[in-house]
Image (cartoon, rainbow, N blue to C red):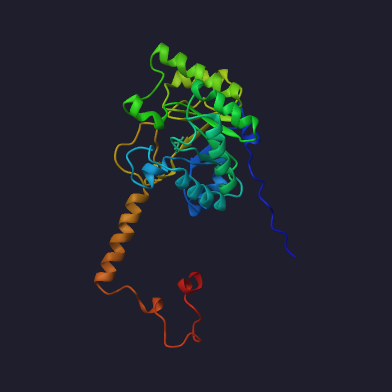
Length: 285
Ligand code: KIV
């Protein structure tokens, strides 16, 4: 009998222990096949509310619902054996009170079986983070640019570029760490400020548009593989151009359908299933 090795799941506590060590590799994931592909390359898979913009074509993350996050969270957990899966709490699901945040975070954890939740906010969310962490919910903080506050900020602008703003971000970072978050995302923040935050807090910082000094990095997967278009923030690096590959495949398929060269004889069923057995697609469906 062969023994299938069981992959060890990365926990929030294991990520917390990576402060100052090997950088934490994080990517967003929204579906099971994507999670399966990314799992062995990532320490943390974030089911980000960015899915509202990337998957649903919304112009911000504000209309993303708890049900959307739970559906995608469940799909990602199904595809991840090794990476720690964290699910974003959407706008309006935690800001009202610690009790509201606990009820919704508990629902996310129970229904998706993820390892923790992420919520945006610094000092103003410290009491909520403390409430959740004390009740067994691992929390990933999120400071600096907070996309759920885009209307109040007047757009997606880098943060921490004045002394006052830098001081606010440092105070936010300290409050989130002190409240018991296991790590925090630092988004769209001036490099020296993100570096200083990383030096000051005892938990890992995971940068996106922040600093190479952060304890880890995160990017939106569709951005790095070239599946998003339009204006890209300067912090995005493209590692592949899948948009072009998909367009070329669709064009080749369309040409063959119009020329009647697809399907070929190898894609068609004969009169009897005894000669070749069922086609692959018949096995799948
Ligand atoms: O929603 C998201 O995907 C995020 C990351 C980009 C940090 O918050």
